[in-house]
Amino acid sequence: MSRPRAKLTSSFPGCPVESTLSFLDGKWKGVILFHLLDGKLRFNELRRKLPSVTQRMLTKQLRELEEAGIVSRTVFPVVPPRVDYALTTVGCSLKPVIMALAAWGARNVVCHNGRNVIRLADETETASPGRGAA
Amino acid sequence: MSRPRAKLTSSFPGCPVESTLSFLDGKWKGVILFHLLDGKLRFNELRRKLPSVTQRMLTKQLRELEEAGIVSRTVFPVVPPRVDYALTTVGCSLKPVIMALAAWGARNVVCHNGRNVIRLADETETASPGRGAA
DNA sequence: GTCCATAGTATCGAAAAGGATACCGTCGAT
DNA sequence: ATCGACGGTATCCTTTTCGATACTATGGAC
Image 1 (cartoon, protein in one colour):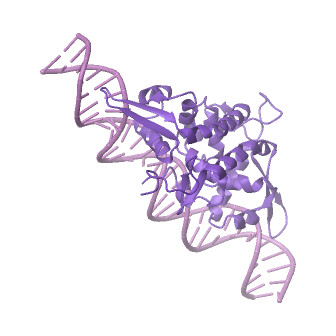
Image 2 (image 1 turned 135 degrees about the horizontal axis):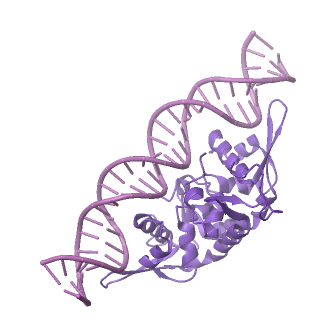
Image 3 (image 1 turned 45 degrees about the horizontal axis):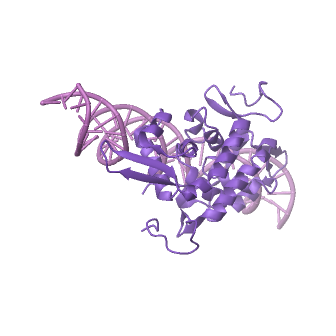
């Protein structure tokens, strides 16, 4: 039934970190959740915010999040179709987690020519020998 | 050079959540980091804590974490070899994030016959219709 | 009658991730 | 002379994941 990754099936049944990660993991769950923090979005609204995600993937990730109970999917019987995605109560409880992830990422990660690297604590723009993507 | 997943390469260059996730992602980074929060560990110590992880995988994940700058790898020129792994300063800065992940996981995730499911907010042990892994 | 938008599904193939297994080098103990 | 501990590599093969593409349904606008 296509779990996000092998994580759900073979995760450590005692590690709460992995437990959470198993739901956040999956190609674009992070951004999706991040956008959903601002409120509900229709499928194509979300899609337009995530231009590089294919429809297949977006649908897949959303369905996984729905199945997990993190987002809700509301189908309106209209045409053209309208489907709203929003965080559930449980999904909202993830907010602090998402925020923590976002805060750390904003503070410590820089995109060095298309690649994420961690910024050394005492540096801002200095070249970082040893990790500078030789 | 084998990024953890396609995330590093095609992540959203503007989403701090994905930025962080790109480093936490990878088969067992979560547990590894969790254990390392308690202090440095030798390779085999870590390995013994993670019986289901193959040596290859453990090495691989540790190396990725090392390359990212999250853990340090100290090789002692002794025999039999001794290699210590520990969180770097940056790695330690991840602590609140790991804790947030752990807290949420501990509170919201239960392992229902080998599978992680999110516990509904108002339930504790009640069967959850619809998501109960029919 | 045709086109368009929405929200999908279905199918295919490539790529990546992961698991199993076997092998390596060294020194001390036996 | 051999064995075992430690910390790996190397190789092979399977599973999973992802992306590209094409196809679908419906009803209103034109």
